[in-house]
Length: 463
Image 1: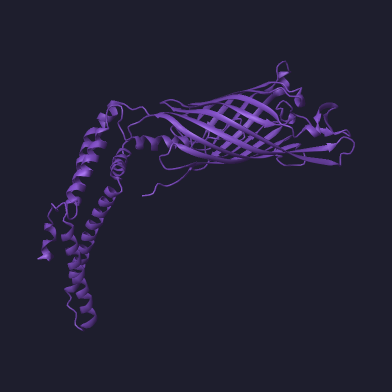
Image 2: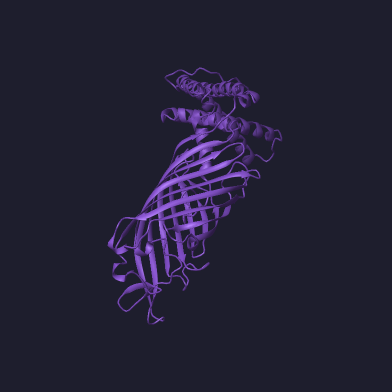
């Protein structure tokens, strides 16, 4: 009887009916293939390692730049004569993708404290930043002793055998028998429902039968659906991905790594609308606002490193900037005016002509920034930044001087030992855009900065 025979479902369906034998063989092949990739140099699935490494990207190490290009974050930087505020996001194309789209907006104002777009600020800009980042190398160290201690190899072997047996059991179940059995129990349940509707006296034993039939129906439906999933994966050539995901899920259960090294490259472009505000030299009530388009492109390499005792970050890059003669970063602490001849002056010194303000001045810079957290369980550390800035020769900026920036100071992150993705803040002191032979004390600057990260947005893989 079908009522008692469901437990005796047999295996071995013929090839020309369901293909269970072939399905089982396909999965057996891919399980063996994925399992064979493990060796002393590959103790987890590449997908597992990739998932671990991509979380490192979701970090915030704010520096002297107004826009943090390495994360989804809010950041603020304050110096003695300008402020920079930025909101940025990183879009990860899948949960294991090494490529990210970076988008951000930022604003900057000069002169005073907390006065972005105030009446006291003579230069303001808003900017849109778009970039692409990609991790091109990453590793995580492990110890053989740890793997032996948790018996990872033995557990993985058992997992492989269990996965293969479970798939083989599902694939070789006779589908015609399952479908016939499902229909039989569904018909029996329908008969009971009709009885309940048409008869006045109800057999109390029907309740136990309903429960039993319902359980049988659920069982056969699950077995049929499980088979359909396996079958569809074979038809869509997704078996290897499925098996890899299963092993990756197994690997994620065990912590075998300690620390990491990861290297990224990044290319970003920034489009800026810079608004210059000038008062008339002879009439302080007369104000002129001039909008000038600026743009830059930046290429950089970033390195994240975690060891037992330290967490380290280093980035270096080069950038080109299309600005104006007022983009000279050494012009600090000034309040420029316009005279009757259309010239921009400051304290009686000619800076340039208004008519030439929109002519491009091409600048370039090299920069490096590093931070190392080594104290109080990697909460506290030091940061160091340096930059060289110059411009190509131009008649509109004959007084432009090459300049250097260097600063050093403490940096603190809220998170503990192994995660960057928490609020980070710091203070640095040094010389900001110092031209050669200039008085160093005139370019001494103290910066305070804070960064608060958001979650990286991810495009979810379709199942």
